[in-house]
Length: 155
Image 1 (spheres, helix red, strand yellow):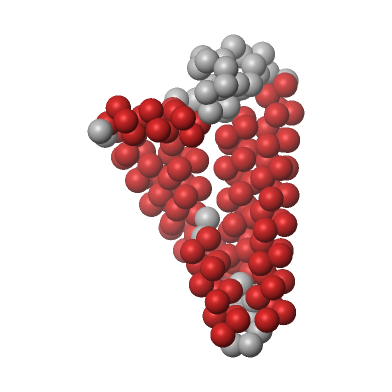
Image 2 (cartoon, one colour; image 1 turned 30 degrees about the horizontal axis):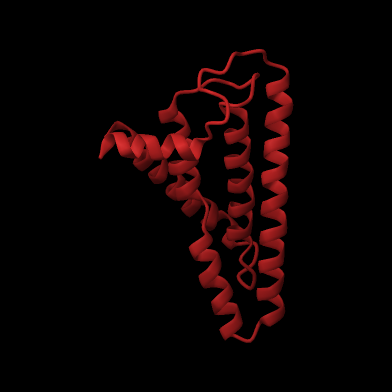
């Protein structure tokens, strides 16, 4: 049950952060969803950076509790990133006949979010190489499996 509360708290904070960033970026342009694009890029960076930095299979990882990983990766990043909003905004652009803007948003979002993920992972791996901390979780066990195990424990 505690893990679910950490996810919920992270999700609430991520959602509020997304709302405020959306308000801040709305003044830039109403004809292109810059806020959603920025949120998805930064969220993609954050989830990959934090995931790689705290990954169990890295010898130089930064140890955090599994609840902290759930809070950040499932809750905060899940509440912050906006794929459903991204999809709806592109549908609206297409319905308005703004095919080029919809296509540009789709291509930019996918390419830049993937690049942000790669950059986050590379940066975290570089930081992790500078640390010599022994992993506390067996090699090869990734956060997805840890999350599944936590859910099964709570059921």
